[in-house]
Amino acid sequence: MTRRTRVAMILVVGLAVAGSALALASRPPGRTYYDTRRLVILAHARQVPDPVIILGDSIVDMADLPQLCGKTVLNAGVAGARTEAVELLSREVLAIRHPQMVIVAVGLNDAHREAHTSDGDFLEKYRAIVARARMVGADVRITTIPPVGPSEMGRAGEFDRARIVALNALIRKIGVPVLDVNAAMVGNDGIEPATLTDDGVHPNARGYGIWKHVVAQACAA
Image (cartoon, rainbow, N blue to C red; front, side):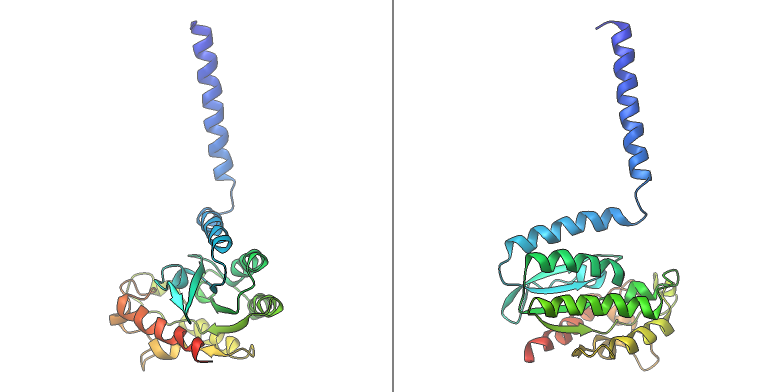
């Protein structure tokens, strides 16, 4: 290989790497995990014939809930997702599967202090998820947003407690049976007890035990 050829190859590789870096840098912030998780969820949707579908954010994403109501659970949770992103995902998932039951558990990230999700946008996207699920014949249940722990614990301080209360009030007005995980997990002071979370936001094993017990009430109907 001549020196000129080696130089040319180095330039080509360098341009390719630079182009890839530029492409990654130009992606919308926070979409990398969403894109990857979306592909996993859609792949699972094609493999599970008659699932209970749970749409949500990291609370769902991290939940160990393989079965519910005697059926396999299709965990369609995406960490970091707000209601708008879950609504987009629901279009694709429900185009693949028409389940008997859909549970919607989203809203915590809409209560993040940097989210600025309006009441109107929240209700519009949430109602669109419910309407689409009903359109494919699913029985729909929705959960309230769980509380966050003490402000000094982990990332709890990033979330607006008053906004969680306000969004839960909107959720209860949607007209769908509600699985009230918030009421089951919140303390008398409006804060999630530190015994139920290790990072102030996500349930630990004990917290998930309560969360799953409430979600399982969907089967009673």
